[in-house]
Structure formats: structure tokens, C-alpha cells
Amino acid sequence: METAIFAGGCFWCIEAVFNRIQGVEQALSGYINGHTENPSYQAICQGDTGHAEAVQITFDPTIVSYRTLLEILFSIHDPTQLNRQGHDVGTQYRSGIYYLNPEQKAEAQAFVQEVADRFDAPIVTEIQPAARFWPAEDYHQGYFLQNPGTGYCQAVVGPKFFKARERYARLWKD
Image 1 (spheres, rainbow, N blue to C red):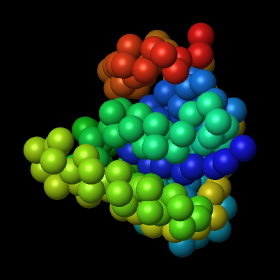
Image 2 (image 1 turned 90 degrees about the vertical axis):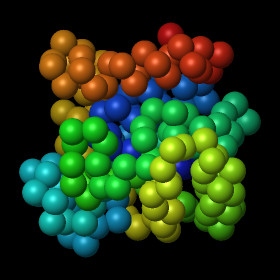
Image 3 (image 1 turned 180 degrees about the vertical axis):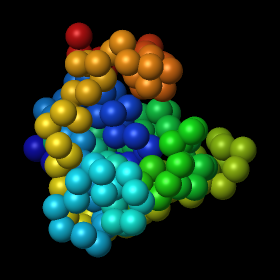
């Protein structure tokens, strides 16, 4: 098994999709690359901890490649929005790829260069070494599947989830 860590706005969106991809053992919502120990959601939302809402993905590379995970990430968030995704604004909502080894760094850099011309604006996704990943509070794990009727899930998470399910049907776990 390998690990990938990505940020792309609210972690509920990213986690919900990656947990349905074949070869992904677990996608865990949490916080990364900040400057405080054991951050809380409340502290993250204030925007002064430096952390990004992120998802730590444990996956089997013989089933789903790191490259495919990058493709999925870039299809479910806008990598051209700096420190935001839609109405979620703040550095905690930044786009990021947090690599765990030189191979992931090289693959992420090559991928971003390759897809840059597919977007109408420059890609602002940060590619940084992964610092300590802090799992989010339990109520954030599997949030969309447990709370599909909330307004935020219907308006924001749901459309991304269903778009990914359609686009990646060949990889989708039901």
C-alpha cells in the first residue's frame, strides 16, 4: 500500500470521492502543512494555523495509480483558485499536493505541467513535502455519506461526487 495526500477545498468533497475509488483502502480527512500541533476544526476555520484541509489516501498502486489519483483530484476541484474553492475562502481551502517521496514530487510536477494548458488560468496548486498529517475530528470522516441532506452537501459535495461517479464509473466501488 502507498499513501497520497491532497488538498482541494473542503475535505468532505475530496474524501467522499476517493473513498469510492477501487484500490483506495481509505481516504481520511485531516489537516496538513500548518504550524500548530494537533489543530482543531475551529482553529483551522479561523485561518491562522497554516493548515490545509486535506485527505490522506491509502491506496494499492497495482489497482489505481498515483497518476490516476492526480487526474481525479484535478477533475473534482479547481486548481486555478488561490486559497479558495467556490464560496469556501481561506488558506485552509488551498489546492495542494503533498508528496511523501521524490517519485511523487516528480510525478506531481510533471502532471501539473502536462495539464496546465487545459485550464483558462494558471494552476496555483502547491506541491510541497508532506509535513505531519493530523486526522480531523471523527464527525468529519465520511461526512457526505452520513449527511447527504444538509444544504452544503446538496449544493457543493453532491455535484462533485456524482460528477466523479459518472466520469470514473470504471473505477467506482458501489
